[in-house]
Image (spheres, rainbow, N blue to C red):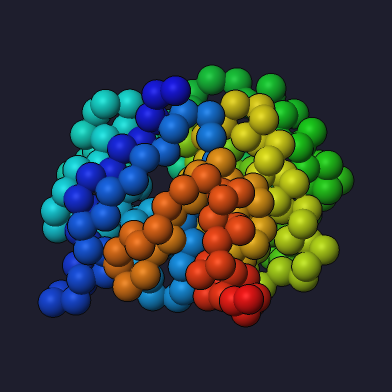
Length: 238
């Protein structure tokens, strides 16, 4: 299986502070890959650097063997990468459908097929297609944020804390959708503090601590690791 994304020796700094310290990881095509870790570990900075919102201070980011570092965000999206940001950030005064169309703002073709696709994935959004996004529940806004990102037809969708602030029953629904999106052929890079759900969904996982990757492996294997259980899953070592 080929790697869709290859990150090598990535460094991200804010002033004199290094948020990401020379990390390397792969995202194989067709898989779900997760980065887990505590707040401040550098997970979000990693995603933002991949999509061009933050300029890396060192390293390489290759997508389908093409270097992304230094590229504008617009061009990175055109290549097939989208980011679902932390906090959802929907356009609250626009309708659900207007938000979805904005997700495809760089496309000039007919959007009917893709609107039907995301409405099939998210029936609740179809029911509320002409409703203002700001009147949706938190879970519905998260669905809208994911659906909006899908409207650009990405090869790789990156999600930053999709379960943040949601009730447990809604979180389960969000992760069910993540699995379904992946089953339909979209590669996923997931940043998530809910390590239990993330590792269950992931083919491959990486643990980040203070800007470094300290552990990696299959999601199922990391979920059974005693150190990870103690640190992230709320389970004491035996």
